[in-house]
Image (cartoon, rainbow over all chains, first blue to last red; front, side):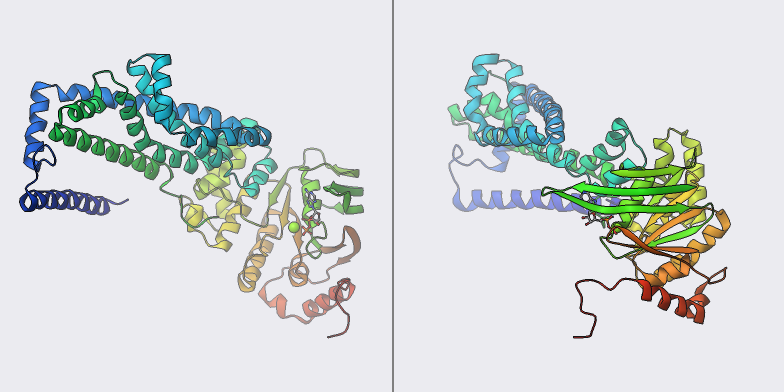
Length: 258
Length: 249
Ligand SMILES: Nc1ncnc2c1ncn2[C@@H]1O[C@H](COP(=O)(O)OP(=O)(O)O)[C@@H](O)[C@H]1O
Ligand SMILES: [Mg+2]
């Protein structure tokens, strides 16, 4: 991506945010809803500063950020560690795939209370919940990635007498990179979801906790603050993985195939 | 340089066996340009794989001169899309464990040999089919092998470009003195390039012909009477496709 394109995208993003604000304010003017039902941008903005000054919003943001990042890392590492061996053995794959799909189709919220029971209500449980939700798509993407090795290239490496390690380093790993990055991109917003679901189990910390608390008190402005911050989390995180992708495979990927 | 005797290759299929090459005898001398001519499915690629040592024969022997090195050019360029042109060419050296600097220098030299040294830092997606195949040839040359095996390297390219690349291939052959074993299903291409043509049909060697056209050969050769005559001669010994009628419909 070139600099002018980045600027153009940035301008588009800012424009979008501004138009959302305008529409929001218009709704307030036209319908004049009760503040506990639908707060104005101004009310949310004031509540934001109040939260920063009185309730140490920074602390909650930090806790959630740690859970998201640690859970994400955990899910990625475990996903690759199980996905790679599965992709290498047809039989293992045949046996494992249905279970992975089945496990993935049970909503994580269903597992969450169990995890709370097993691992207590510390930050570790939240990390595990975030990790699990990232883990499944990452495993599937890893398997798909390592299946992306072209037989033609395999034959080439064979003709060069590459050993197992060289085949991995020069062929299998680079072939799998687009798949691995796809998994990382899918996993990024899911890690945010996982961390918040984990916090819903209760502990008194994090943005998920702020949401629960606000819900109990009908403090809709606080609810909005937490939701907006979470949205930025997701976007920032996604953009991070996107730039990683551009950096690593940008020069050659998705161009004409050889 | 290479001597093949009683070579038979049988593949196991889900239903029974399939003999792809049967009792082949064949030899290749230093600095020769030999072409194996045969229609698709006649076992040409299998023969090259055997000579390269990628697969083991069911029966028979392949004797290579001790220390012989071989480079292999496939029908498709098979360039790795995530490596630059230069690093695609240096890959065989990297796999052989040569130091980085040597890899790059020799890759550059090999690219010069095929006239592609302007593309060093480009990526494969930027190359046309002909350019990509020249890079693939550079990759096969980079270890300075004694023999070059070429499996229908230009079959996917348009005929004009193909003639052009063949003229350049002969120049490269003269310049480097390499032994080339070429595979094609085009009679014209085989006659133009070779000292000797071996005709393969359903896994058997039917006949072998020396090509009397003097060298050096270039674009004018295609129009010469001797060329046209020789192509006709080869066509006569090519077997009629068994399941096609001899007479026009
Ligand atoms: N690994 C293999 N297993 C089974 N059959 C094969 C294998 N390789 C080639 N064959 C069969 O051998 C025959 C000759 O193939 P090939 O050597 O590729 O012919 P050509 O290169 O002349 O077109 C084909 O019928 C092909 O299906
Ligand atoms: Mg073939």
